[in-house]
Structure formats: C-alpha cells, structure tokens
Image (cartoon, rainbow, N blue to C red; front, side):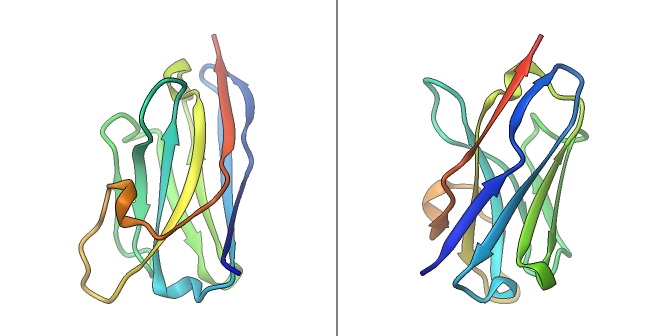
Length: 127
C-alpha cells in the first residue's frame, strides 16, 4: 500500500520556523515528482511547492517564495519543507502529494494532477 505520512507541524509564533517531513512508502520514490499543498479553514487546497524527481527543479507559490524551501532525500524516501519566517496566514493543514513523472515532464500545481496524498500535518502560526 502506498503511504505518505506528513510530520513536523505544530504551533509556532510568527517569525518562527518549522521543518515538515513527508515519509513515503509503497512506491519507487525516485520515479515521482512531489508537491506540498496546504488548506486553511474555509479555503480550497492550494499549491505551495513542488520538486522534480532528482531535485533539479523546484517551484514555489508566490506567497511562499523566499521563505519556504522544498527538498527531498531519495535515499530516505522523504520530502521536506523548510518553512522560515512564518506568518499567521501560513496557518493551514499541510499535505504532501506524489505524481508519477517521466523525465522531461512539466511541473504540476493542481491537486488533480497528483495521485497520492498524505493525511496532512497542522501548522498553526500565532501572532
């Protein structure tokens, strides 16, 4: 069974940092592009960041550029999201997602483009 398990969320003051992790099992991790999405209360799930199979390409939503850094460790079957300079508007449930990605595939930012999803980890930023 494919499993994506997020961890690392919590309650943090504005300006603080968190490092989210997404542990993946049940698939060949290196064959999948990965993404982070978030969903705040009352809002649609939105794209945060994506990373290609071998980490050669990364993408960020405008709202997180300069503050969030996506990375992955294929040997550890794990993706990360380093979040710095947290803002109250970053409060959301954060989800990791995976999609099969042949070499040369473009990046995808729509939730419908991703095949597998984790259960989410909650990030709450207090002011």
